[in-house]
Length: 534
View (cartoon, one colour):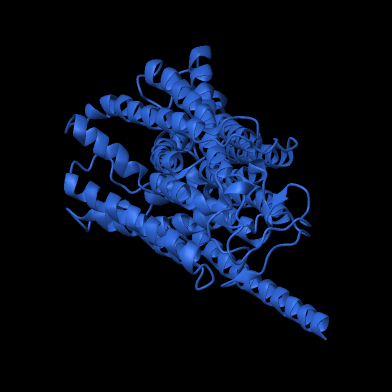
């Protein structure tokens, strides 16, 4: 693979990653929106439970998370063709069967066609994003950062992208139905071009596929089941305890039911997130753990979006999209140049969390004309900085090796080789032997030049963070939606921002722990080198 084919393939991959990220934010997170609005449709804490309407979005969200992880960890599957298949499946299931209405909540008993359509759309979303992550992991670590940054940018500005397509088609609400086919067509074209160029740029001798990895799939499935069971138990408690045996509901009983309905999803989400976090740390150490924590916190923020849909103001949409992309590029640059300077993922999360209470109706009413911009701009900048930094760090960083394996010396507090150095062409696309990191022949099996040479392992770590985002958005959707319709003084509106701030604190602690471990490693190597000289 020479420069004449590698550079166009990398550019096409970045464009396709942006398209898939924007698609997933618009269509993949629709299952979380369905779950949240279905929950509100039941009238909690006083309504009755309709299992079909409420369980279907949850089952679809869990299926989506499992599918994207399963696709990402299989080395033998081609990345971009799988993503293309997922886009086509979603378009046929949602665009044709439902006319683009991915987020509708059925008000009548579900039919078999509706169930199969929603599940097919979830599978399509999982295939699309899982295929993109697999394609990202197949690149050499020094060449992953542009594609990772583009994917993060698509996720961050997906409401603005959808709104730009709507405004390009029509200025009224009817443009929404015609905007999705246009966005789907552009996404399919971008992914198809990336698939063709990636095939042409593929080196003649590829490393053999690694052994199948079921660990990430099993852990994700366990987290999905915990999310589903936890929310079902919540519904059962609300339905059983909302009225006393004599059919009355006193103030204490009402407060208890409200507390369970509003705050129990937080416990469910945290439990599922801890399962993914424990496995991520065991698999990829501190950097992988930080990525899962970041994904968990970003899930409800991505669900909230940039509050740009139906604004009807082109200037605001363009401004927020440009600000989000610029923030992603800034975060990606910091991840490549000075990853040990500050925990930029935590800084971005705090900025985005501060914008959530501003989306409450009581606050929006005091900000006529600029209400959406006040929420959208800090959300775009904060999420862009956090996801741009975190995704590039975990994608291009070699600290995703299993615990116990040796890694090259650290730089700026992050273990691994120089991320700015180029790969050794003779070592294949997944090698990253820079000028100050000589190639090693004593590394464990499956690693080249001190970096994991199996793309499925890197893709699995990447997929765990996205799965954490999907499941947290799914679990926290009821709390977030109720919080946005409640006065901030009642405490519900700040529940999710406080949880995101707590995740930022965890990221700071992991950042400090990683720096301490790297300092110990450097001291031990220095002592060993001094002993060998004497």
